[in-house]
Image (cartoon, rainbow, N blue to C red; front, side, top):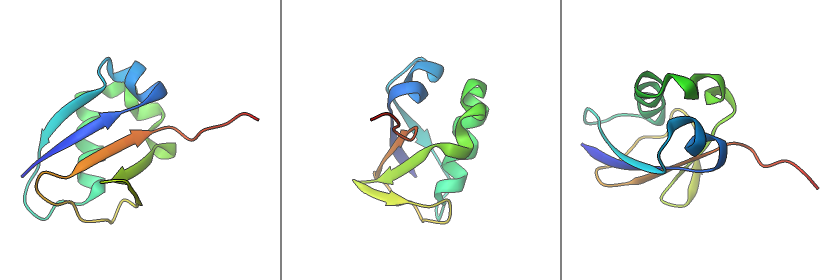
Length: 81
């Protein structure tokens, strides 16, 4: 299956792109997408544990299943005041 990945803030800077398409096996979980992202962009490994993930606008966990053509958004936690 193919999913679109959008990267924001520090994730975008580290990967050097704001979007990409991942080819994943059917029945993949968010964890699978994160693993592929870390392999493709090793720079992301240092922020991967704190990276927030949303699928089609809703927050997701590593165990959330992915669906064909979904949009996965990756962004670091927001801080500041």
